[in-house]
Length: 170
Image (tube, rainbow, N blue to C red; front, side, top):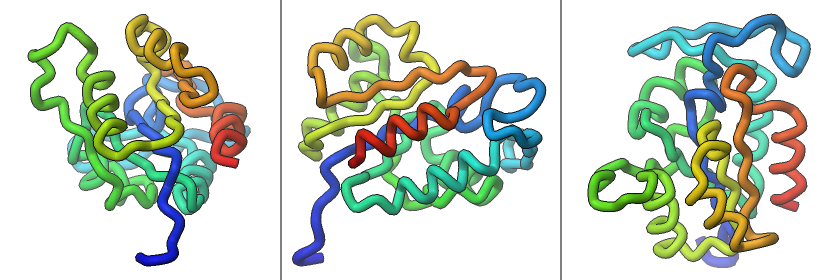
């Protein structure tokens, strides 16, 4: 739309270990019980408050949310309706060509998307980032431009991490 500000921050979101923690125990970071939903292909566990916060953040005018997950198109198709995440229309990056590079497919896909879209700043949320030296090195080489968050895969995205994203969006 003419006159509408274009998003300046691309936020790349993983599913498993981030939105859907692995074997979570006890209460969520929000102090409530974990919810379980049938996503059609499997059950997912999530914190309802985290979903509400992501839905709110996705409305931020500077933000462009993008799926960067092995779920690929299954995230908007099955996960979103199951948990109430309003990400059905977010772009989905693909693992196509994952074997054409020595790099992690997610790093390659993200870099191609950033090149094509020209995002000024980037938020990358993936529980694997802690273990991907090339991705961390790429992010660290761009101080102030990239916020990378690697949640504990047993806890998923937490309040303090969502607060950091909110602050980064401005």
